[in-house]
Amino acid sequence: MSRSVLLIDAGAAETRVARTIDGVVRGFWFGAAEGDGAEASPPLGVGDIVTGRVVDLAPALGGAFIDLGADGRGFLTAKRAQTKLVEGAPIVVRVRRDSDGRKAVELDGDWRAGLCDEARRRVEAAVRVTERIGRIDPFDTAAERALRVWPDDRADIVGPGQADVAWTDEIEATLEASLQRALRAGDAVFTFDETEVGAMVDVDRTADARVARGRGELAFIETAAAFLAAELDRRAIGGIVGVDFPAISEAEERKRLSRLARTFGRVEDAGRDGFVRVTRPRRHRSLLACATEIAPDAPETARPGRQFTLDWRAKAALRALEMRLRRRPSARLELRAPEEIVSYIEDRPHWADRLVARFGARFDVVQTERKGEARHDIVEL
Image (cartoon, rainbow, N blue to C red; front, side, top):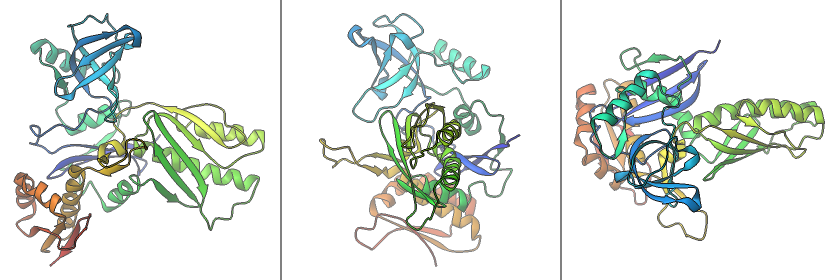
């Protein structure tokens, strides 16, 4: 039986969770640091529960628009509403698909799905005592929030007090790799293009790979499929996913590919060209959506480019500093970063105060002197 573990690391600027299965990272979750609950909330993500109000019936679209307060509007179809849609009526909904900045958030009336009995009771109690519009968080701890993302697992919990370092260099390297569009693993190169409804994944051999046809071809695909199953989990990609493997001519091999693809989600039969289409559940925001935003200077006529958010860049810099402070308990360190990251961190002095309380005042955060530098660097003095 597989062993699932949630490694929870309470960082100075964020709470981070890595989910592993039999020692292999299969997912990430990021939340506010303890004590930062009053900070600005991130955009609504898949799985968030919200109290709203029906503000505009849209029979032609088969549903209604829901006022979500500070989070804007969402759309709820009558089919998913779980109740009659009446203009002006309050309603509790769950985010089914988050917004890309151009379309309304897609909602689901079945907010109870995936919640334990205690979490359902907490939501119901919150709805009874307040008529406010906004998010409801029925969870008290990072472990509970992470378990909401993976509700079917009976995972072991490794918290800050149970392990010296829950977030390791290996986990950080895996996270960085899963944020890249193209990724190499063994003899395969994977290219990920996420869309509003899912993703397209192209699977090719590396330039120096020499894979024979026939049984050798299938062996390559089997290895690539095993890696891809884990990578789709790490990236939290849901919706419709098209995977383009190398072409397979034999019918029996295509059946084998279809069976392999069932580890990704609900699958259609593989074609002779090696293309497989699967449908995966959306449990929470994808890793790409958590870390990036649409680039403001992207042309409206083209597919928008994306860039890392300032919040993600600043927390990644502090995460790197915190890991180095743990690993080098007597070293004096300097975090060098671009002006916007330094200013972002200085505007939140409680983050540095937490680091001082944990590791002592043996670090500085300084602005890099190199023009155009986009990344941070950690220097031992």
